[in-house]
View 1 (cartoon, rainbow, N blue to C red):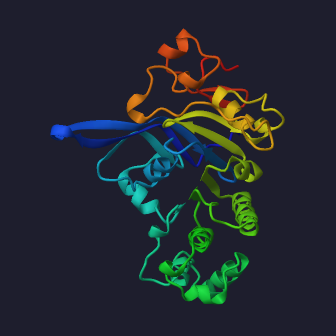
View 2: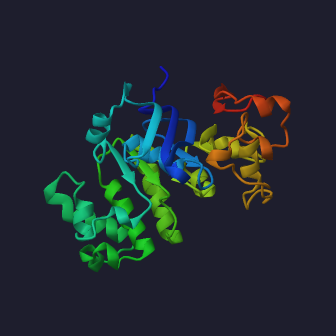
View 3: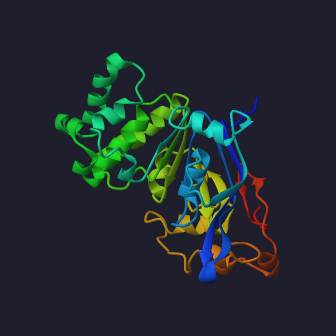
Length: 311
């Protein structure tokens, strides 16, 4: 029997209301047609440049977007479409976020207590926290620190710890690796893999495609607020001939252990999106049809792609 996703995002769109000169209101659409599927026991890594919609996806799933945001599309969890109330009930319990910023920590509470909140067994809280801190190279004295006393790397480890001690079914890790030393990075990636192997579904949002390739099962490629491709990690092997989208192939070629060839051009701004394919201006395979037609997201060779010429 085919495994069904525990969490699925279909055609997600996010717009922000803004006021321009003369107090004229406009709606700026920054995300269009984002699609992902999370499965129990699997890690999906979301890769894309800044402004591609990675963090907004996480915030939309948890319903923590700003008040001027409007969403469209559908988010389902265990087969049920999530309402605002559903997201509030699941947030921090069955669906947990590892955020980017230390600002998500309570500035008035010691970090040990903040990590311990997610541990159900009161008798084991202290031992669990001490053991986890030790594993990440955080000394005993760090347990009594307040967030302002943490370095950037230490704060990252604390944020990771708050999720790793939970009983969440879905963990969303938003840029979890920057600021970590090599040893801590290996430990964190190992912990993510173990959590997935024990049945958790993990969404890893990252710029570090090489770290993602070490532990993920699938890679979703975001570009200008849209999912261009979802590929198996094995598709990146060799010269990436199994990859489907020109942008994904370009990212693969740009890796230091591959050809290390950068892609010319930049991602279009939300208010400057082309009518057709979002990658049109930078694609070496484009033609007139690409300029006029926005490709649908379709299944090809065990993955999904948004390109009319992918085979």
